[in-house]
Image 1 (tube, helix red, strand yellow):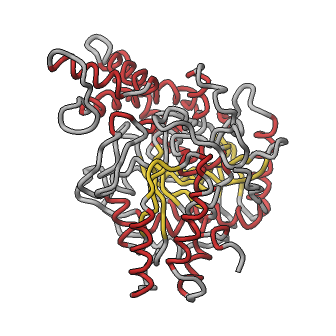
Image 2 (cartoon, one colour):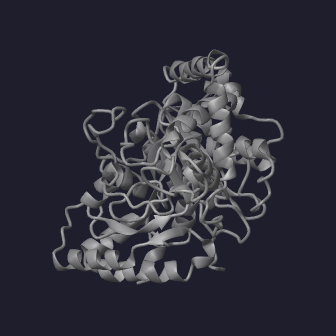
Length: 484
């Protein structure tokens, strides 16, 4: 058998079920890969002993009816894991050990998988390059010195480098889809409320959504099936029947209508992105889909709207980190107020402070109506654009990102340039819709580029099916040579 860690999740599951490999041997293979990939800085915490114990327990008493039988998984360090350190990439949570398990990770463990370790991410998920983490930047396994995208950069890097068979991230403005695009992997941001937010360290509560990151569409459907589901502990969780995404996967998309929005052609967009988009359109057309030009006129307001709504919610959510109840506490200060101030000053990084300040400003007296309320009205208009178009199309095809992965440090001193990286992904979060980033090609430097499929609310099955048909006809191969 070739190296098992090169295989897709669905292939690995088949090998476990047919007893061609044991969970213990599989876990050992991933541990070996992780130990030899420290240069990538993808992991914050590893749980190898615990993982090996779980693998041995599975092998002693296997249950092959589970969705993820005996599968070790590493997860983004934004998901609270019981008795295992959860940092959210921040110094302020550097000593935080939750006494509870997030609903999404519990769903995965109940499906037969277990924890390999926690993956590095931008601090509190605020970033597009994984350079804001207190634990240092993650490196893209495609090529040294490149960012893996963010905020789920540890997840995308670990997945692409075969350090985990699949993983999960969170997406507030593109934090699953952009890193997936940068590393040549598949990333899905589900409909808001499909996956529980309970036990996920909050950034912007009306935008955050957990989702799968995988090597293939089939793997993506398996992971989504395992992690989704109604949760009464999350007031925004959608109470609906659990779908069998992997069983209902099909590649016949004949007659489906695919919208092509004119607003996603941005100034100075590299020619390669436009060529990739054309290639994607041709593949879908050849598969029998009908392409329809559409307009999403309020798209141009998406980024400014997002950078009012998200920081406003972040400033509110991050008020709980005061050094009193849990997390880092400064030793400086002569009274309680000074202790608060020093704790937050020392505990938070620059990008987090920047967003808290923006958020506090837009929520402050005299500015609330002018900024926050107006942003919420524009958000409704952005959602209405999508709703109107989904009356005539089944899905929308756009690029995932305006460029391929950039160099570490290239955009750190230019926040606006960094924020523009999310130009194609942010509108989807504001509208609460599902969107899938698919690896679709390579630029002239050999770096991966992705295309994005946007679906109607709760229509994950359709975009997975379109993605499945696309994947079979795209012939994308991720050419990663192990250099680390």
